[in-house]
Amino acid sequence: MKTLTTIFLVAAVLAGGSARAGFTETLPEGAFMLDSSISLSMLRHRYNNDGQKTTLIDAIERYEPGGGLQGVLIPEAEVNYLILINQIQYGVTDNLSVGIGIPVVLTTSVNLDLEWTEGDYQPYLGRSYTEQDFWEWAGSMGQPRPEDWTGNRGVLSDIILGVRYRFSDDVPGLHKTGLRMSAMIMGALPTGSPPPKEEITAAGTTMWDLHSQGELCFHFMMERDFFERFTLGVDLFYDFLFRHTYDTAEGTKNPLLLNLKGYVGDTYTLDPGDFAGVAVQMEAVAIYGPALATWLSNNDAAAAEKLPPL
Image (cartoon, rainbow, N blue to C red):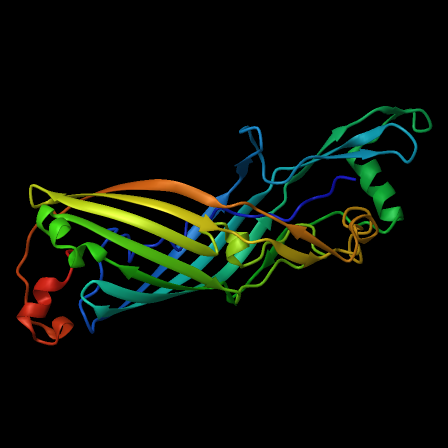
């Protein structure tokens, strides 16, 4: 039996850098940085295993018990995530920084937009099932029509811990060429929440649900300056997403669409695979200003010179 599946998002948040700074930049020794941002992600489509653009939720073919096709439910769903992302970083040394990311999902909404395509001719009706016919039949069996869903109001996502080490500073040959290299490791603490198991359309707040990065991430990054104003960077990364075990829906709210326990048991396990890729970034410094000895650098002009450009 096909059922509506829980929505998982690619929500372009929590990327590795500090406010999209250079791939190899680290904070000066003893410096703290707090960065807060708001991310609004809207999603209507995904790509299936064949690389074809399709709906977020698979269409569901419904059959008359022992008979022909009643019709097809087509969810043209749209999902919106509003997320507050807080990052705190600290410079252990000039080329070693540690950080923590605390994402909070302010709200999540799912507009289901459920459509119906008629199926086979039903002799006892003298016609095919209409949408109203189908939901009246489903209602007689205790299955309500699924509604839009809103949730995750101020819910914590997975907290991210990370460390970045610019090792090229400690390799004299590399330092002379102007090529900067760094390595970064990030890991997610399981502080997020999975989607409610008995809801038809619901989304969780874990990194697995957000699908914006892995749960254990390894980055190797290189950068070089050109003409004193341009920086070209490359980031090679591999992100692990681990297998997760979930409690199976019992159909207490949706007896026709989510009555899965009898088919798969008390729990089920999903293996989402991993992320691997490369990112390329070019930065330009449009205007060079003076490095001022202000409260940002503890009134130290030398420390101000070490701060990265805005």
